[in-house]
Image 1 (tube, rainbow, N blue to C red):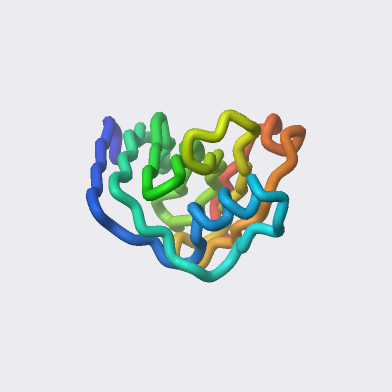
Image 2 (image 1 turned 90 degrees about the horizontal axis):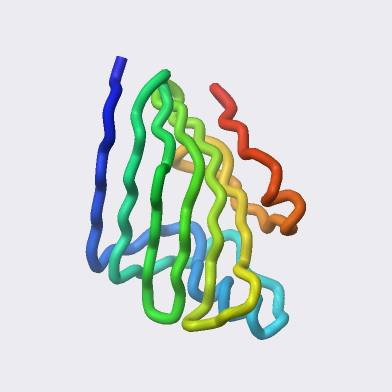
Amino acid sequence: EVKGRLNLTAREGEMLGISLGEAARQRQDGGAAPWRGGRTRFASASLALDLGNGRAEIADGTIEGSGFQASLKGSVALATTALSLRAAVRSGPATGAPLLLQVRGPLLGPSVEPLTESEAAAPAAVPSRF
């Protein structure tokens, strides 16, 4: 069994599958955010993971890019790579409510769905498989 803490940092990278910056900007402007497709270019990303009991729990996760900041919480089942994450995304220095997203499913093809504040208050369970 794997136990301990893992800290990961990336600089000047890109994630495929969602454009977090565009989603946050459109949310701030009152438009419909793009939940699928797009790219997220980021200046920095960091994850502090607590490992144990077959899971990697995100103790602290952040992604920062041009015009957006995102904080991450959640878990990954290590044996199956099933994940359940919550992201709070803010556009620029905005002080309003963040765009809340639920990311669930297999690591290489998760679904991304918007959350209401009441849904975000409920705990995120990590399924053991999909």
